Image (cartoon, rainbow, N blue to C red):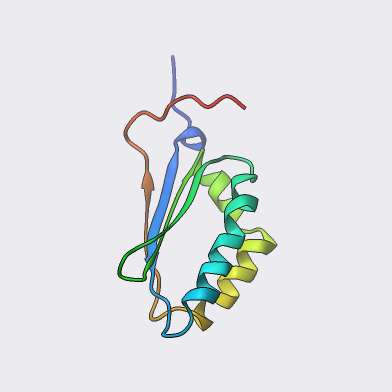
Length: 109
C-alpha cells in the first residue's frame, strides 16, 4: 500500500507588498536580502522576487513541504524581516498559500 506523505507535498507561498511612499528602495533591499539565504534553506525549491510596473513587489516561493516552510519562517533572518516590514509597507501583505496540485519536477541536489 502506497501512501502520500503530507510532508512531501510541495507548498507555494506568494503575495504582493506595496511600499509606503518613499520606501521602495528600502523595501527592495529588505526583500532582496532574503533571496539567496532563503534559497539555501532546506526544502527551498524556488524563491523569487519581482517588481511590478505599479511599484508593488511580488514574492513567489515553493517549498518541498509545509514543514520546510515552517522551518524557514522560524529563522532569525525571516523573523527580523517580518519585524521590519511594517515600517516599509502600506497595509498588510496580500499573501496566498496552498499545496501544489500540478506535478513538480524532480529536483536533484
